[in-house]
Amino acid sequence: MFRKFVIGDIHGYYSEMMELLEAVRFDYKNNLLISLGDLVDRGPKSLEVIEELRKIQNFIHILGNHDDWCYQYLKYGNEAIEWFYQGGNETMAAYNANPELKDIHLGFFENARLFYIDEQSRLFVHAGFDWKIPFDEQKEIKETLLWDRTLFAAASVYSRLGKRFDEFSEIFIGHTPTQVLGKSIPLHFSNLWMMDTGICHGGKLTIMDIEEKKYWQSK
Ligand SMILES: [Mn+2]
Image (cartoon, rainbow, N blue to C red; front, side, top):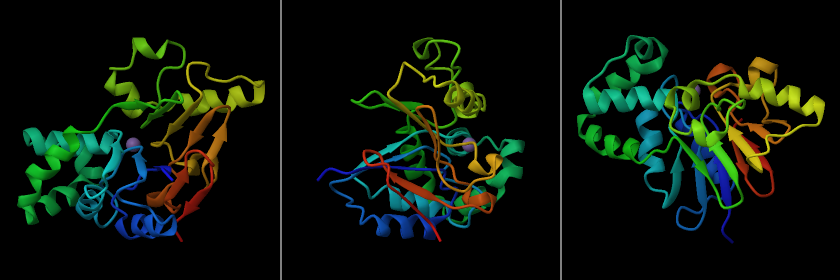
């Protein structure tokens, strides 16, 4: 069976990612994994996370803001000061210790997408989008897709009003940890799923079966 999974922000937590791939018996050849981005920084093994994900045949990488910082570093040597203080320091050090991975990972990041819409009209994006404007008018506005924190707030209002985001059947985002709402499980508001359950904020890492909505979390 072709199973499809979505995983929240991994942030270098390699062991927890492996724990989840094993828990779902992930098939590296025949299953699909969609990452909502922010693979690197903060956790102990950013480069190992990428090395592992490179082995998956059907892997879709949605670019996160941390991934973009890392990409800008690998491509142009940019050492963004805000990145440095949010885990980039350790990631840069890891690349300096493993320079042979720089070009390989640059290629990996170049395959990332700003968003993905599947055949069932589900949207996967790192942070969100401006829900007041049609998606088509903003689908290339990287800043919004990578940094938004208004969509989840709108979704929580929508869920109370019984409204939904009509352009998509479902929306999956990372970026804003569920800890901002006091939870460590994926949150479902209206037709939006918040998948960043805050592994680097005292929470957990989560993987979910996209069709069944069954999810698994790191210990
Ligand atoms: Mn993020």
